[in-house]
Length: 61
Image (cartoon, rainbow, N blue to C red; front, side, top):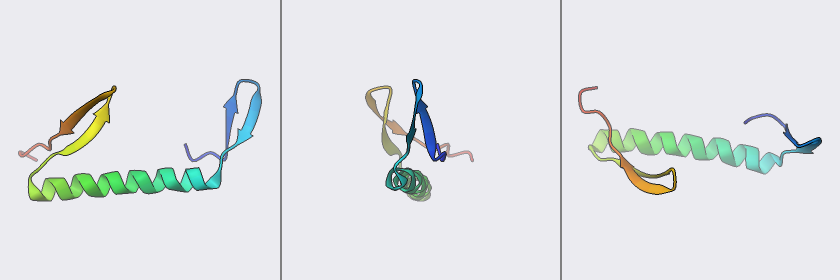
């Protein structure tokens, strides 16, 4: 999703650069949260398919 333009129907719309950088920052923050949760032995609460669930890391890894 790092493309500057997306296709919406037959019209091309320029993506807002703030949204592009915000998306990158959110992905980076989610990775850091998962790393920290793994270090302290807890899960991460996320929204999946419209439901709130806790992702747990594999202790064997």
